[in-house]
Each structure stands twice: as C-alpha cells, then as structure tokens.
Length: 113
Length: 115
Image 1: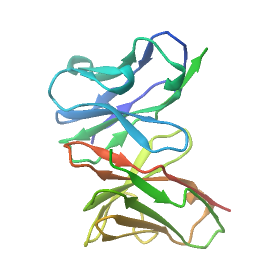
Image 2: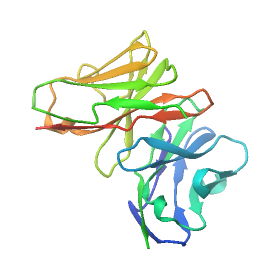
Image 3: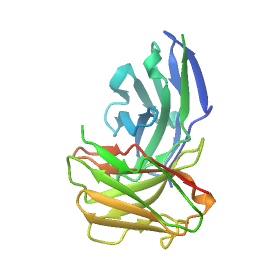
C-alpha cells in the first residue's frame, strides 16, 4: 500500500524566507503525488500534482515541487514566504490515480513577520 | 472551481445517539464521493468510498454498521455515525472527484464531538 511521510508537524519560517516542506513516499507502483493546503475552517485545496509528466511541477501561489524517484521524495518549496502562506499543508499519494488518496500527517506552517 | 459543501460544520451529540453528516457537490455531479476522518495532529484517513446507487466500499478496519453511508443522488452523500461514542469524536471530511484527471474537491469538514 502506498504511504507518505511528512516530518515536523510545525514549521516556522520568516516572511520572505524559503519555505521547504519535505515529503517522502512509498509506493509499489509509479505514484501520483499531490500537495494540498488547508486554511482554517476550509476544505483542502490542491496546490500542485505530479502525474508522471515533468518532474518539476509548478503550482498555485508560487509553490513548486520536484519529483525525485531516486530519493522517493516530492518536497514542496516556495522561494519567499508570505504571511498568507500560513496554513496546514498535506502531501498525498495515489496509486494509479484512482482517487483513493493516502495523506501524510501534515505540516502546520507559521510565518513570522 | 467546483464546490463541495458539508453540513453541519460542527455538531455535538450525546453518547449513544446517531448523527448524520451531509456532503453535497454544489455545481457538478459526483457518482463517487470519499469520506475521510482526521484526528487531531494526524493525517486524513480514508474511511470509505460512496457510490451513487450502490453500496459503499469501506476501508479495512472501518465498521460499516457503525458508519452508514448513503449516496442517494448524484449530488448528495450522507454519513451517519450510529450509536456514537466519545472515541468517534473527530473531523470528518468528504471529497468528490472533478472532471480533470486526478482532481478532487474537498468539503470544509464536520467537527463531531460526542459527550
């Protein structure tokens, strides 16, 4: 079965600094990988997805992620944090894109002014 | 984008009672919907796949008699927590696939507290 690991439940970053959220996956088949963001009292919103095309994926709000098969990783980055980036971020994996997602534990991002 | 709503957003019920949570796709049809639960500081765990016009498919370890799912129309799935106990207190989230491949729309979630 597929799974993802996100380390560090809380991540603090200074405004303007690099945002880096790590995600490592485990899958017996070529994975489909996703990053979602959840703002308070709102549903999860898709940031970006990897579906076996380009390994560097660009998403909304200036985020991007790189699929590295050799490292089984799909880390999320943003060059310069903004106060509005404060939210919870989830990495997820799906085998064969069948819509059944396995989520990581999430990272609560706090942006320090 | 497409919107999925859930009702209620919060509910408090007494132990032993049943609670129904609704998940609606507001501007699109969904033959399939997914139900997740999320415990504090933990990941979303898939509970079941709701199928319009047929029985739901439950994940291993999820009691189908306790978590009743009904997908009566192309825009509505309901999750009923029967004979609720305090350990059922959790955040329940539904989702529905969009028209694009690998796309899913999530509801805002329902916070259930069983006293």
